[in-house]
Amino acid sequence: MDSTELNSALEIPAETLAVLAEISHEINASLNLDEVLANAAAQVKRLIDYEIFAVLLPEPNTGDLYIRFAIGHRPEVVEHWRIPIGDGIIGAVAKTGQSIRVGDVLKDRRYLAAAEAVRSEMAVPLIVRGRVIGVMDIESRQPDYFTPAQQTILNLVASRIGTAIENARLFENAQKQAETLLLLNEIGRETNATLQVDEVLRRAAELTKRLIDYQIFSILLLDQAAGVFRHHVTVKFGQRVQEKSAVPEHEGIVGAAAKLRRPIVVPDVSLDPRYRMLNPETRSELAVPMINKGRVIGVMDLESPQMNYFTPDHVQVLSILAAHLAVSIENARLYEQVARDESRMERDLNAARRIQGALLPRLPGPEFGLSIAARVVSSRELSGDLYDFLRYGPQDLGIALGDVSGKGSAAALYGAVAVGTLRSLGSLKPRPANMLRAVNGFLGERLIEGRFMTLCFATWNRRRRLLRLANAGQEQPILCHGGKCEKIPLAGFPLGIFEEVTYDERAFILDPGDVVVFYSDGIGDAQNPAGEFFGHRRVAKIVHEHQGLTADGIADRILEEADTFSGGQHPTDDRTLVVLKVQPPSD
Image 1 (cartoon, rainbow, N blue to C red):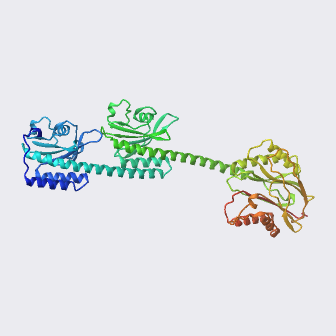
Image 2 (cartoon, rainbow, N blue to C red; image 1 turned 90 degrees about the vertical axis):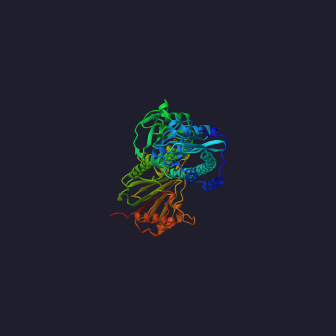
Image 3 (cartoon, helix red, strand yellow; image 1 turned 135 degrees about the horizontal axis):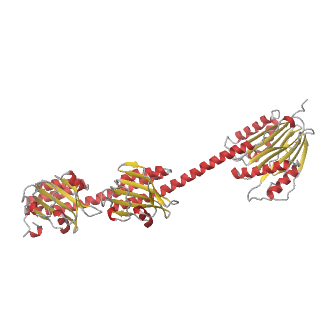
């Protein structure tokens, strides 16, 4: 019978009231929902000797009642039973907010047979602030087992248990939210800890499982060129699978989420015409777009074999995760693009370095009466310094050493143009000043903003032992002659700045054993930890002290001293030099 049919409130013995007070104290002693429900079952047992006990609470997404705690029910009933509001005795209590006592369930059409041989049932609503938050249900295998007095007592117990359950649920929700936020923070750190797209996606699949107990999970990334979403990660029932199918950009639940730029929840995919069946077992689906800087880059898609599986909490959590993941994926993509570009550039630079090395001129032989050494120490993969030798005749040789402004591939390319110009003019055998004027005219006609070069050019005649020099802004060469080692004072404008420039020229008659050193500013400008420059005086001093060495020995000594002076640090500028040492006449 319904509680509304009770003629009058029954008097409750003082002993029972004392037990009720004790029950109220016991069930409010914990904020753990499982403990509260277990405690409630034990306390009710003290007053009413039931055989089957259950507390049912509404599911967040459907409102259907599920068994949150039970004693005496079969496990499959606890796990799978869902009771819509209004169905059965329990659903009727939830709908009306009134308790129901049934003496013989076999005579009540509302009864839902969840347990065998049940004959009597009593269900009472759990009400907090005028709202039904659940139902407490007890059953017996004896007919007419529960009395009106017990119904009143169970109503009183339920009023106390309802408040305890609500407090415990609020506490449980707060704990879950805190745990979710911590987990989201951890996920954010982990997905940002790697810059490989595949690793980011793999970790996302693992970490999402810690937030949502999914059965089927996919991350699809947008292929803009093809206009489709491609599966990059798919996990089905705990196993990662290779899903080769693609989803057209504006089709299916995935396409709808991307087009609308918001999460799409489908409680029953069989009722949604947008659904594209890939997994026959799917009953419900949740798709959340991943958006970075206003652009959809992909979709996270979850599927379940249960209808109405995904809750508003799932949507909120997955939306936060999708935002984190979109940034991580985009960062990883940019990094991989940069890595690919750098790898390609590295291959190109290595090839260019090999080509540049192969293009370095061979040293002239002894027929010119000189011991010759040439060295280049690059500060980068490609050198902006250059040297060259032009064979004017059987006994005449042109010597060039230059330095292009800037560094790297642009400087190397500019230098290659300059060398080509030198070699094309070499057939005319111009004297040094004329050579510089001609090269400057060529480069001046093709002005490149921010690019110019310095160049020192000399010619040598073996028979007369005559050295002629002109300089276009290059470091002044060192000449060791007559017991003195000093720089040759010779200046001029760099090449490629002004079209019409003239250059001075000097000539020297050298003796056997004399040494001439052409070198770039990377040697003179080398600095020690105190900020002092290596300078031309140290170069002259080294040549003077080691004039007896071969040209190779002198060149190596200069570079070793410069390296030691700078503390062994990698050069900040190219270091290039050419050493000429006049040989005695051969018999």
